[in-house]
Length: 416
Image (cartoon, rainbow, N blue to C red; front, side, top):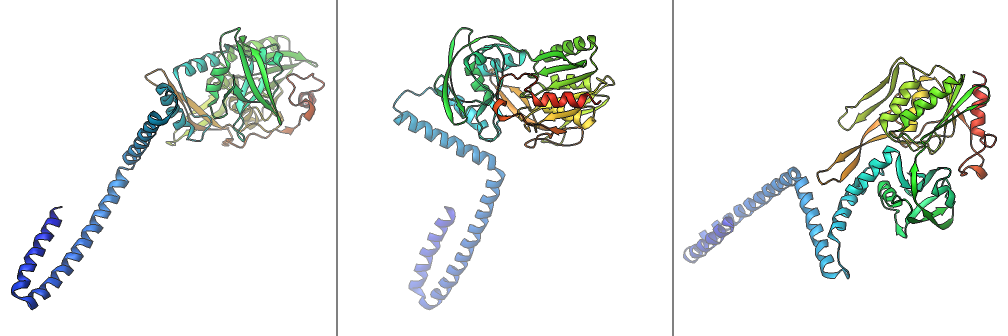
């Protein structure tokens, strides 16, 4: 502004001089205009470069301001034009959820206070619900049933492994984080629930009644030829004691070999699977993690070990903690994997509580098996690939004769 005022004053002075000495002043005027023009160009270039530096230096602040301005504009349109009342609390919650959804990681999400309470309850191993385990399908990103507990409401209502949940009580849940859907499925014992599921190309509405479910995370029995069998449904807080009890009971019955079944096990608590792996493996590395900073943590087992022939049953729904266990057993060559390639979840999440009682679940690291492989998006190949026949693949339970993967494991262990 000051420079512009100075230019106007110079022009006025030049006009006066032109009126006195036309030829001389005209020549000087052209010279002054030329110098002024060059000066203006230099000033523009200088300011342009300064702006680039400022924008680069304050990029985060500029972006933050841009986002806030857009939110304010959206809020204005909603207030002026939305036909019904706006629930500001829900809008705010949606902003937080949308921000983490935008990361593009199905395992990174925002929890309301109610949702984090429900999530904590789930990890404890007891809840009122329908008795199913779910996992996000990485291709369709739809919530898919991977386990149906026998005798639970889900099994009684006819839910099957592979069913994809698309609505809960007529509310579309296809874009919701897993934990938000689980919170809607759970509720008070005795209350009704309507699920809409996709079963291949068919859409079904299934009515259920919630009941108190204690997750049987470990099942065990003795097979023929003094062979023990332990199924781990999920790695919850109560799973450690249940696994220890199962293994102790089987050893008291003088088993000579063991089959551990983690098929359709979506994972769970890292501390739980580390404890179980420590019981099975000899002294050495179980797994290690790498964070964004390049740092990480190493998990190792002590001298105690199972020290008997071992087979682990896996399939495409064996994920996360299940893969930690299977990967470590395979890498240490203390057991064989039988079944199909695992899910491929090689990342670790951490809960970050917020001051208002809500929380964030953020993927903080990748984990690596003892042979330095990160199985994220890849999975673990079994030592022996065995597919279940298509007609029985989604059955809730199989007889030992139908279960060709189990039969293959038994056959292999007999030669050990």
